[in-house]
Image (cartoon, rainbow, N blue to C red; front, side, top):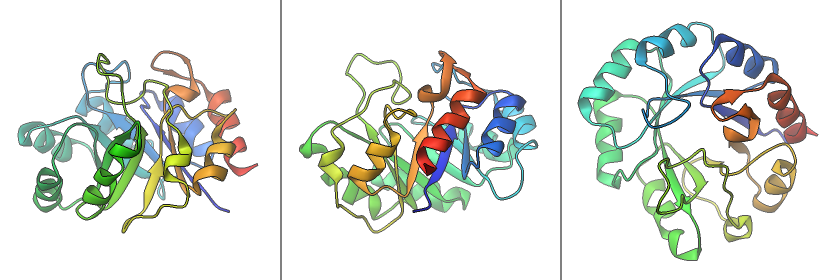
Length: 212
């Protein structure tokens, strides 16, 4: 089974090179100032030029207003927007219309009560990112290294493509794929040597585990 990998929170040219060497399907840039993976639009624009054709460039934003999205989309050559905050289904639809880019909506899962949101966002987004719900005291909506009970989504499907995220690393990603049937996976903290610092060997190990 061919599984596409998104390496998120890349901030250096070496990260792009490592992701490409590992066969990345997507690379993600984080435009959330509280994140240790934050990059400015100008820095992301330079990084985007390093991304080879065939790899989708994704902008991760958190409850971003139009002014920030205007700046990002005008500065960075992108293929997709990832909305990772508390954006409503109406806001997701509005962003799709305004910017003409595919939109991926992240939905945090902790228990079965969170599952209906996947259906709601699946009707308005181009893709959904099924992530672990952050703790209430967390500063970051994602990239916390937390996973959820993958059995909650085993065998489930939505009207649009979806991607599994949340606490994935080389040691557990094969099991996560087996339990959920995911055809796409997203990793950030699971390929870091230190908080916000990607490691080429961990990137390669993760990709090998996905395809192994």
